[in-house]
Amino acid sequence: MSNADKNDYENVIFARPDIMVDRSTHFCPGCGHGIIQRLVGEALEELKLHERAICIGSIGCTVTAYEYYKVDGMEAPHGRAPAVATAIKRCRPNLVPFSIQGDGDLASIGTAEIVHAAARGEKITIIFANNATYGMTGGQLAPTTLMGMYSSSTPDGRNAAQSGFPIRVSEMLATLDGPAYIARVAVNSPANVRKAGKAINLAFRTQLAGLGFAMVEVLSMCPINWKVEPVDAPEWMVKNMIPQFPLGEFKVLPAVAALKKADRE
Amino acid sequence: MPERTLMGGNIAVGEGALLAGCQAYFGYPITPQNDLLEFMARRMPELGRVFLQTESELAAINMVYGAAAVGFRTMTSTSSPGFSLQQEGISYMAGAEMPAVIVNIMRAGPGLGNIGGAQGDYMQCTRGGGHGDYYLITLTPSTVQEMMDLTMLAFELADKYRNPVLVIADGFLGQAMEPVTIREKVKKLPEKKWAITGAKGRPKNLINSFEMNPLDHPRRIKLLLEKFERMRVHEVRYEGLNLDDADIVLVAYGSAARSAITAMNIARKNKLRVGLVRPITVFPFPYQPLADLAERGCKFVVAEMSGGQMIEDVRIAVGNQNEIKLVNSYGGVPLEADPIFETIDLLM
Image (cartoon, rainbow over all chains, first blue to last red; front, side):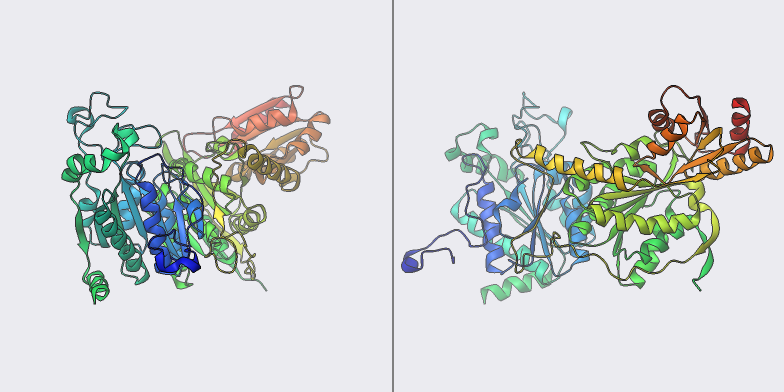
């Protein structure tokens, strides 16, 4: 929290991490993405990754993720961030590539790239922002849209005969041998935000320790496309989204568990 | 004395890439370029360089994009259906100005087509190929020696212009065995200050093609267009044979040029004044040399292994006054010298 006014340091309990650019975000009111970006920024700062992190912007609401950090960045085509990150890490292993991918990006158009990066155990960090909708393009059906849920391309709600069922990516990837750490968290309450921050931090440390592929799925609010008031969105998530996408850890290699344990001691 | 050895076309591409200092190769199996991928699978790790067989050609081109962004000399190789898949990544790389080499050992399309050699991707290669305003320098070897030499040149040109460069050949040339003189290894690779290597002791670098504000985007595109114009001015390459007294000019590249040269030699034996223009770059295309020959009153025979694609560039160069005949093969069969000679004979 080096950004705090030094004269008033004692009283500062919350501030923008210095590794983040001082600017407003382009996110809608009540969106969870701003929180996710900040949690990633805190992890980068805590782990002192200013000179090593590479932020890979993917397509969707995270398209300009790289604008918010004072670290090197690049843009990946829709769904391809895990492939881009794979090459960066294999060419320059000292760099710390990461991407924040939305559910359309990661779980629909980019399924091949995420599955194979995970299966190869690429030493990269993926933050998977799941808000059950295509936010950027206006709320169409996502691979994670809930059963019965309205979307602008399922105006009568998602039904299985037409659109099948939502994908639980964390559970699916956890069946592979490549991943070292896979967890699902949420940013709907202060307590959950703290847990999400810890998981994201651990996902970066998993990469730094060379332990393998790490992904944190973050359930994120999208009130504008959920058609609920921003203030009601966290509760909407508890009622509708968490039952379909239960929070927890799905893959923790013993070496990653040791990192966690070292934390507590 | 430089080493001289017998080598296959695809392998010569791989050897050329190693000599040019290619640091990372990404590829997916597809016929007829598998021996190149297999060669790189063995040689790149031996040299401590990066090799990865990817889950798809899409992943391969995006890994090339990532490797280029961190400042590596990098390449992929594929064949026509895989090349179609790669257009997305190539467009991003052109937009983000990322240097890389893409080798397309063409086979017959459309669709799955046939694994026999063809030149049916000419339009896709010379007109950008993916979405948006961009062009790629496109080199067309016609011997195994040129497979090596032009691959090496491709890496130089990619870095010179910060743009992807294509090397296009066909399945026949990829499998051909010929003597090759091994070239000297490139000793010093260019410095890349724009690369994303970690923001250490400098402001952060950003590799992207995106402009949030539409008013900013035309400025970026204008710079790209100026770059493509510089390529048109400085990078036209072609070989001219027997042009001084030619009444008929053959135009052919790659494998088709080999048959065209044979047809030209038969014609010369029959006292027919036939010459040949062999484009070595098809973007930029040698419009001016052909226009000059047209001015002199030459007739043209375009020999290609496609439905007739390069002939459109010849028409642009030559205009409507001079006779232009197409002689071609398609569907994965070679173009032989006999039909080319017969077409010459018809024009006399």
